[in-house]
Image (cartoon, rainbow, N blue to C red; front, top):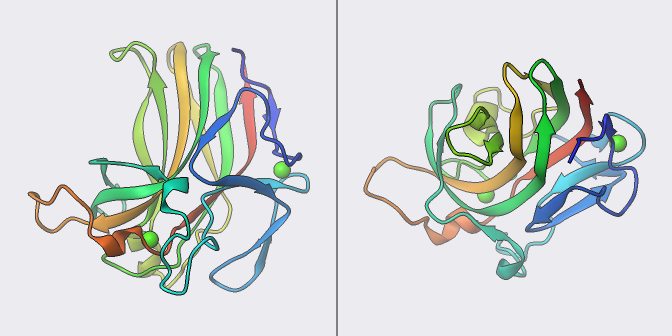
Length: 211
Ligand SMILES: [Ca+2]
Ligand SMILES: [Ca+2]
């Protein structure tokens, strides 16, 4: 599939060509954990991955089965350097895309957290080639709680990520937001119960593709 030049999530329905796992909805606004109401960066709506409000009084999910489980997934943020094990969360997937060498993908993202360390919630982007050895983007941590906590923040504000392709790409674009747990003992392979509390949110808007 050829990626649309502009995706802005202006309808309640997900644009064609995209699928989600876990909780996801398009919204017109959202209250930031830092206080202000957040609007779309383009148009009137954006996509919100996961749902920080779908929790009970203990800040655990009302319906744990509604979330995508990330059994064994590990990441390390290049900025916080905190090794992290993923618990559960949500993903946006754009499968079967073809993007030629020299083309450019950009998107706006805004990551928000409600928990505290060591429950290191995080957001990633990756471009997974259909053939494992082909060109792509390995799972990249856009932001994590540890990075925000350094500045005393709980939200990243809108930021723009850009990928300029240095080779042809055929595969899937995947955005992930996850409940996480800092790993201080490398032998730990399963998250503690508390790691599943306080789900984070990843807002996505204004995905642009230029050949
Ligand atoms: Ca929009
Ligand atoms: Ca969490």
